[in-house]
Amino acid sequence: MTNQLIHVTVNQDQQLAIAADNNRLNEVISQINVDTATLAIAVNNAIVPRGQWSEFMLNDGDRINVFGAIAGG
Image 1 (cartoon, rainbow, N blue to C red):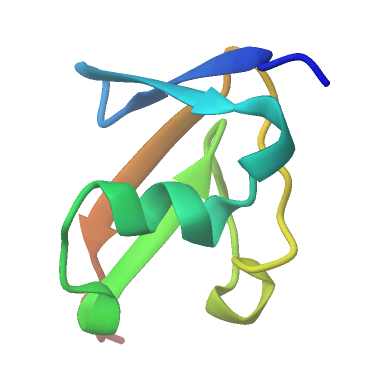
Image 2 (cartoon, helix red, strand yellow):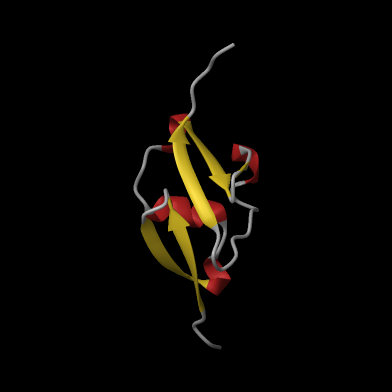
């Protein structure tokens, strides 16, 4: 088995190299040590619903934006 890596960018400045076989969004988010209770996450400018984080597969070169969710109207 090879240890292939993919590279993703978090918030336009943090580069992460992650194992290609451990590329689910929730796994990557757990590596950046943030409280996810009030966060929203977008991958390549598309919001990923919280319920899909554990199933969402990242690809090499993906751009992840993590930001505080704000209720409004």
